[in-house]
Length: 222
Image (cartoon, rainbow, N blue to C red):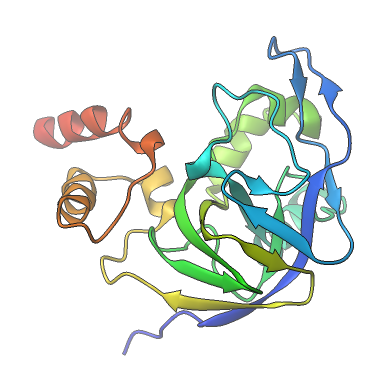
């Protein structure tokens, strides 16, 4: 019998930009330096109130309004790197415990405080992230580990604060997680997601569409 994922977890921290930093990667400034905020925070269409996005061409927008990373995945990196991984270090807005982020099913809905969020897509590591971390071959290592966390869109504006319960109000039955789509997407995954969107059961992140043709082509060859 397959065990079901937990339906509740906890919010350890809400993080927003501490300062904008000039980058060496050609993207101007980055808002990846995020630190935990105190008290209730508003979640709106474009993310946590008071947060910012530096590279708006590749990050942000309603489909990537909020980035969540679990303490469980952070603990892996703490052991791997031999250094603390405090909330916000990976540029995440939410540090969670007890609910899947990397293995969150696409379309899962989280109720946190009075806000309703929806799992959309995986985080793709970039040169700015590598520069921020200062670890050798960071993009490659982060990609190979596959512990990428998840982006979420804000369905219902609301407020939440550290310590709030995370309730999984809806988990789609298709079973395709952001982690699987990042590390091992198949042509059948693409067709399933497209069919569900056509039926109105799922709203896909716009960031998926650029990858679909390549995945489908690889499936046809295979």
